Length: 148
Image 1 (cartoon, rainbow, N blue to C red):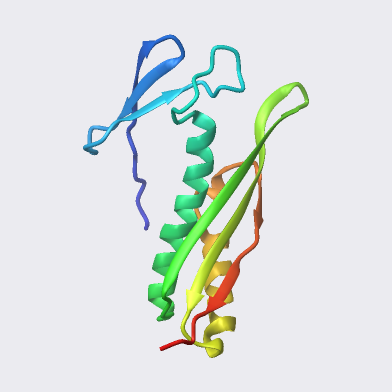
Image 2 (cartoon, rainbow, N blue to C red):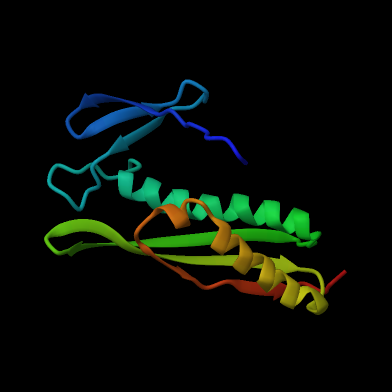
């Protein structure tokens, strides 16, 4: 990927602490709001904090899928959970760390080492993780499902 790419997002305030996020190249909109932990926050709506953590987690998955394909790693399933830690540091709120816990199910024990290398390479190559200041704590789990 030698050229620059741009991803446009538009946000329109609706009311209170809520807005609607869209992109001219996407069909769906996302309602966003201040999280309920802050004054006048709204529960049950995606917040910027959720979206940041989701960006890290979804980037891991998409990077993993590309690396696994290029490495010819066969797997049965991939799922991941991400937990972002919001705290006040030097008087400013920030997401200071993101705990990533991907779970990969493979078919044979013989693929475990390759699977771990693919996961580690994916985490290292994730452009979103490489773009944020938060510490990324990566704890992969590999499951062998040898039942055929």
